[in-house]
Image (cartoon, rainbow, N blue to C red; front, side, top):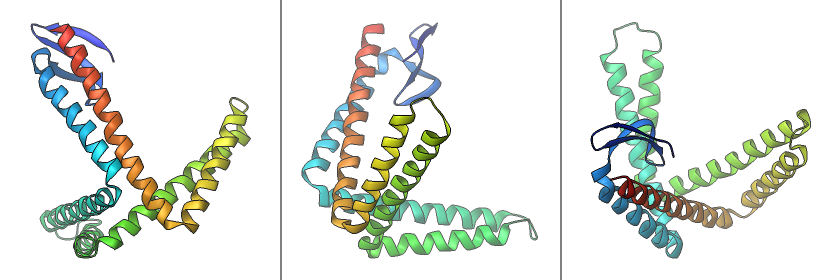
Length: 194
């Protein structure tokens, strides 16, 4: 984290909860601490209730698709007649809206999309690491090993979707736990600076 005094009672920080130049009032450390504690609690709940975690992730995916679809339709509607890409934007908006509604009413489909996204991520990361490993001499062994490991994980997830769902729940839980810990560290740092 980088700190620079910017005036009375505020600091420029780069942290888990803001990008470069985000101004945080030093007196607001309690809110960041509360965010960190909430993140830890959500992460613990996600670890102990993976089914609920996955259903919640599918629900959030459905809501996100509905909002995205509505926004794209709105932008297409407001665009001038004959604008380049207006029809495509409207079509993708309708597609996202319908997909979001389907995910909300059939969360299993949303979970399936999340699992396939996870598998695809491991395949792309694996291929990338292998390409880097074979094309660059720096850290060659590590890149090749990570690439092979990622491809193996993708294959395991492909043949065992239940494992993929469990791994997805664990990744969500770890994301909340690490984010919560980072927020708590930031809050304590802000408190010392106050």
